[in-house]
Structures are given as C-alpha cells and as structure tokens.
Length: 426
Image (cartoon, rainbow, N blue to C red; front, side):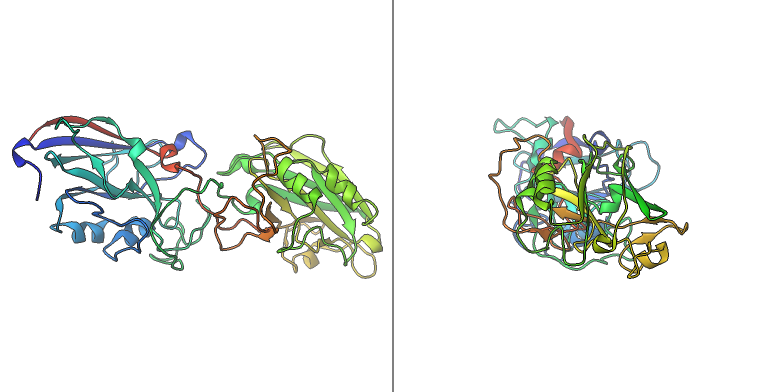
C-alpha cells in the first residue's frame, strides 16, 4: 500500500460549489475520492477513458461503477464516495452555494485524487492532475488550507460537447444515460472562448406589419439566461434575392469584422450603401440586458428581404443575424407575408397572425475590453458554429453557437473551492 501507516492522519475535505458567484451556475455531482501512492489513479491525461466508470461519472453523475472498479486496485489505499451535500439528508448534487464534505485517511507520501461532474455539461469533471494533491509536505507535516489551484476542469472525451446548460444530451436533459455521440480523449479545458448559447437565448425579435410597414423590435433577454451580454447597435438592410450579408465559409468583409469585433456597424453600412435597397442602423449605443431596440422599414418588391446583424458584446467576434439569404417580408405579388408562411423557412411564429418571432443564427466572428484597432489574432473565414467546438483563437467562419466549450483557461477556480482541514492522528 505504501506510506507509513504508523503516521496515518485523518483529513477533512470540503468541496464548495461557488458557481453562484459567477456567470455559469451549475450543480456539481456526487463523486469519488481516492488516496493513492502512484500517479494517474483515475485517468491519464491525453489518453482515452479506461472504461472503468469515469464515463458514467462524467456524463451521468453516476459514481458507482468507478467506485467499485477502484476499490482494491493496485496503488489505491482507500476509496470514498461523496454524494450527500452539507445539510442534506439524502444523496444528490451540490447546487450552487452548496458543498460536499468527506473524510480520508492517509500516511506520509500518499496523495488525494477525486472526480466530480460539472453538472451542466456533457462529460466535464473536476479533479486534480495525475499526480493528485499532496497530503503531506516535504517535511512530513500534513497539508491544510485552500488547494483549489490544484483542481482543474477536465473533458473526459467520451461525449461531444454542447453549450453548458443547454445541450439536450447533458445529464439534466438527456433522454437516457450515455445519450450523446462519442468524442475523443481526456483533456484539460484550457479554451478561453466563452460557451455561447443559441441566438434565441440572447434576443427575441418581433416583427409587426401595418399597411406594408414592418416594425422590428429586438429585446435583449439575456438577463433571464446564463450568458448575460449587451448587444450592439443593429445594422439592417432591405435587399433582393441575389444579396447575402455574409457567406458561411468565406472571408468576412472589413465592415462585418468591425461590427462583430467592435460593435461598430458604421463601416459595414458604408460598404453596403448603393448595393442594397436600404441600409440603416438602429440605436446609437448598446442595448443592455432587459432593454429593447426597434426600427421600421417599408420594403418594395426589389428589396423584399430583411437582413440584420448585431454584435454579442461580451465576446471576441460573435454576432447575431438573420440567415444569409435574409427574411422574406413580401410575397411574389408584393404583398406582406403572413406569419404562417414565415414559419416555413426556419422562423418560429407567434399565434397572432401579424406578429412573428424569427429564429436567428449566431455568428462567430468582439472586443468589449480590447483596442478596436487590434486585429492580431485573426482567423481567415467566417463559419457557422455547429457541432464542432470552437477551440482555437483564430477566426475561421460564421456559425450558430450551438456547441462550444466552457470558459477557460482554468474555469475550475470559478466553480469549486477545495479545502483540506483538521488533520489529526487516526
């Protein structure tokens, strides 16, 4: 077993869920803790999951298989399950503001490792690296105090990632355990890109038509969601069928770059002047969460389509916009389209016949804190952000942000605090 059993100490371990203090509130799930002698008792970074129960813990918050596998394994001194939050009378997740506490016994030279699921994810979990947390110092004295800096957020690599708190294959929403498609290998979540939800989690857009004049209102609803952000002044254009505001997979124009990175639609409006039937900007300052911005247009047959774009302020280069072809406001005979017809082409209509709620795409292309002239970390093509996580600092393409990694570089510190205390002889 290793260690000096005669000098064994008892350690109280507390894992606090502090995600209620941040932007990505999540439960943390029941987990497994081990006292061990060698490295990598639960997983090996960069390698595939061993099939010993980590997948069930990281995907489904079920520690039972991993607990059974580790019990009595080589190099493992003891195994403990923590599954009942402080103050609770039954097993369950530790909600934001909650905590787990448990006790382990260890001798000098032995270390602590554990794994607990980031609840609003597909397969992310918290734990130390392969070496574990040293329970004794070089002088042989037991360790105590805050060891949160030794805890990281890991990707088990067993299921494709979806935006935290929104994925249909994540434990709180999946139809059955292990519901999502497989991914790859265990890796540290070091991506600095914020996970972005669907555009409908940022704005509601309502379109009302009276005598051929359409009034479009965008309401910033992010104050009711997990990701809170202002949106920039809204560029809107009326155009024909041959025009697209952007083309997925192709390079963005300078104007679109300025809008998506700096929230400045002026350059794009100047680019489009004379190329479309009408181009204008709604608003002179950001629309904050809970606020609305509105504009009116009266389309002609030559400009029967509406396109718009607005930056998601708390991002590097994400923008909300209509689909590239725009939204048809008029029928072929020049008459305003009823809501029922708009429901055909990816919009969701309201019960009232004159009011439409359009579903938008979210493009990846912002700098709320940077210098607008800083264009250093360029990608090359706009892209639609679909199932592939955005995992590089270079811009590649415009994409609806359905799936993306969680915040980094060390998001564990924003979610959990881990403390060792009350080391006493056995």
